[in-house]
Image (cartoon, rainbow, N blue to C red; front, side, top):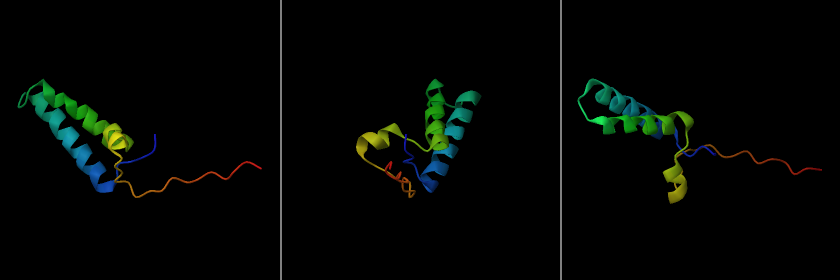
Length: 70
């Protein structure tokens, strides 16, 4: 898994995930609020499967290429 979630996107996902989980836990929203766990996980692990499928990448980090074996 290569990181494809950048800084601002990551912070937004973590905050949104925590808010959804808190709202679900307090009964403000229904059980669907626990989907915030998925949003939170994509922020924590910096990987979003939907971004991969859509060819998106908000992460400015470049993958370090390995040197060829000699």
